[in-house]
Length: 235
Image (cartoon, rainbow, N blue to C red; front, side, top):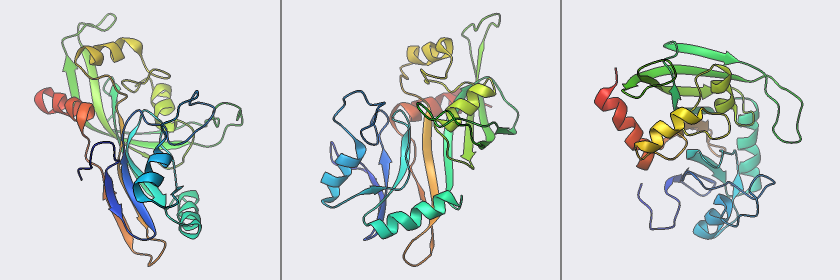
């Protein structure tokens, strides 16, 4: 759904909640990681909707796609319970280095980020959707290989998909914290400067009538350009 310049695209909205398409590069809210920034998604949405907005979950600043918000505390609490009980199906698209198995699971505990050293269980399911080989040398290899993945995190830990891909040695492209700089530079040379992680779909029960909703956010911009590489030369 197109939005006026400066507005966040709205994928679905009613009196209780909305799902919006967060742009890459916008932080969700102020925190110790934002370094004095003043542009936050929650502030944009409060101005855009003209009412209180409660974040039901969060995405990393560099990640784009579906974000679920509530307009009242009761709806926010009901959605929070679904997230805690793992009833919400979160589906992501990711581009990684290498060609992993057609389907694999990373079951690797993660800490909670800065100031939260305790490790907790973390599980992410991956499916390989397409592969790509570029004529760019990578170390001792004459070409560089990449894969388009669909990721489903069954837990919600700090930077879970990014860190799980690093653990599996299939680093996320464009990730400057947990990725591989050589492969990030290959994509920057192709005009793709963003981290290639996109929250493409959310499925959950409406806190009002209990009906199941599934909302999708098609990739756009530089992520769509990356997908076109796989369509042109993938398998």
